[in-house]
Image (tube, rainbow, N blue to C red):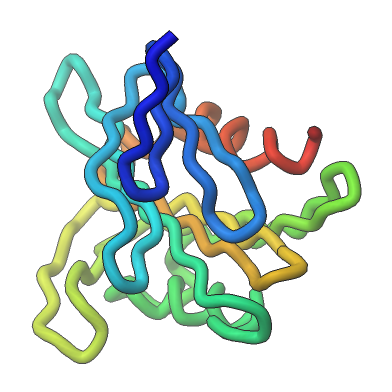
Amino acid sequence: MVLVALGTLTVQGQDQSFKVGEFNFKTPSGWKWISGETGMRKAQLAFTDEKTAEKAEVVFYHFGAGQGGTAKANVDRWLGQFQEPREKLNAKVEPKKIGNGQVTFVQAEGTYLSGMPGGPKTAVPNAKLHGAIVDGADGNVFIRMTGPKSVVEKAASAFTQMVEAPLKQ
């Protein structure tokens, strides 16, 4: 077996696993590793719809213990990244206990305003956000998937399984 370490990514055969904070995640089958640790982004993946070639981007953030804000503050910030007001986003916020852990799942759909904080924004209509905030002893892990609504919906089940798996171990 070949084992190669690439930043926070470890590749074992076809399996791609990586650590963010205290949690070990596994890349879902068919998803692509985009980059390793770069600044605030600790991992980045992409899911591509084979029929349309459209992509959803999945980004993992970890800032350390006591950093990055509360789950509520991040949910509010994520929902604020849409052009429409919150009441028109079909937003869902679901805290969920898994094993000994806690995850807050977030969903919203509408016109996503893509871009760096404080920088110019690009309006992306018919977009969806599927996010998760995983409570961790050494700081929360923030995971956000964004892209065309249809693509994010196709990837949602694999996303949820990827987020929940480390908490079930």
